[in-house]
Amino acid sequence: MNYIKSKYKSINQVRIFTNKTILYDFLLENQIDVLLISEDKLQEDIYHDNINNICILSEGSYISEGLDKNKTIYKFQSARQIVNELFNYFPNLNAKRNNQYSKSKIISIFSLNDTFSKDKFSFNLANQFGISNKVLLIDLNLLHGGYHCSNLDTNKNLSEFLYFLKSRHSNILLKMNMQIQRLGNFDFMKGVMFGPDLYDISNKDLEFWIEELQKSDYDTIIFNIGCFTQTSLELFRSSIKVYLLNKPCPWSEGLYHNLVEQLNWTGYEDIINRIERVEVSKNLTEANNEIEVNNIFTDQWGGLAKKYAGNF
Image 1: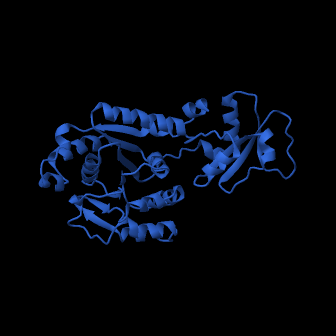
Image 2: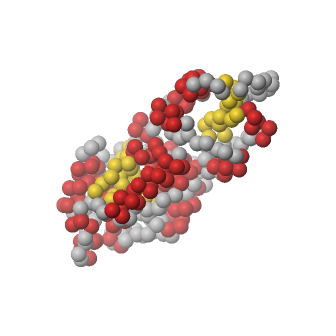
Image 3: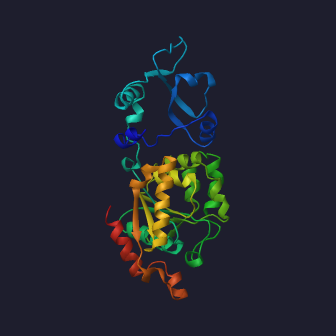
């Protein structure tokens, strides 16, 4: 497994399932392109709509029946040879599927302990990109400060859009555009009216949404993410970059190391390479009065965002 992860970057995820129950729990919200299964597990009758292909790892004794469409690979050979045979059977595994090859750049912004800095950075980064690009900022926070709401229509928000997303509306981009408002140099989709609505977004919902967003005319799409769920992880995986806002202190370091441990443990270690930590100086995080809180576009935050926007 480690060999595949390190050598074949076109394969986004490799997972090991020790029993059928764990496998089926995973399949409730996920799809598997190819399931490699040992021939001694065939009697468990493992089939599921979310498994696209099954490939049998044979010890040499498996005999395919005439109607059996499953591919067979000899088990006792090098990992490199096994992967090469997988690519021969399933060429799509070797296709680059990262979004840097798509029209729109997708960026995620997340924080382990500093929502204020995350929100400020999100608005100012979108504003910087918006100088020369068409940009959409989507608010995926559970809770919202009042600092960006005064000039916005409260009836236009993500909650209104989620109904059409989950029903797979045939013109989902039109429904999304009806909820979008202009803020600074960019388009903005205000967050949900009720925070737990975000937990209703499934991996399949997200996959459909991303596919439709790639058909839009946006150059850059930024997600300001305020919750840590499996769907959030899939969004990180769909992003060309994940900006992680970080307070420079030992507590933040401990949280970051635990995040890395969790990503490694759950098979999401490919996300680690997408993370870029944004160190926020103390003077930026200390808003001394209501004016400083409410003014989302400032020279200091704009300067920090400009530094990272320049990397693109």
